[in-house]
Length: 184
Image (cartoon, rainbow, N blue to C red):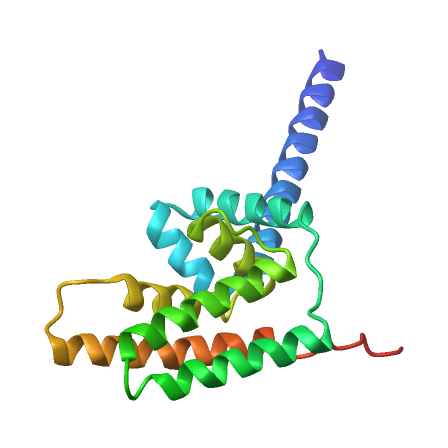
């Protein structure tokens, strides 16, 4: 009978150690996701309603991102998009609506040329969030401001101005040359 109790105690100890290890791994994974995604982590938790579902979604985004062939822009492409952006900004004074829609289109084209999905805004934003978690909120906000309706003319112009500010930040980061990893 003593042997049975020792076996039960050993099995219980193994189970407790396994549960503690599993809990520590979950905590480490959660901390890694929170650190990497920052505000995007909180936004995702809020949008799906639970931390567990949000973490699953963020992990699925990472897996989907791995299958994409994301590449840097050539110098010629960066110059072309920079010129396009400058024209859109200059156009804002005379036609804010057209300028903001062009800005949205420029960002979408840059992302598409870099290899991000282009068929669906939500899929594109999700993929961008993996590589640019601090930037994706600006991209979403700018896109929302361009495609929202219902504001009076003055508010609409302000929304478009905000979109241009958001898109400028996005374009500036996306057009940055890729940095070489630091030598150790």
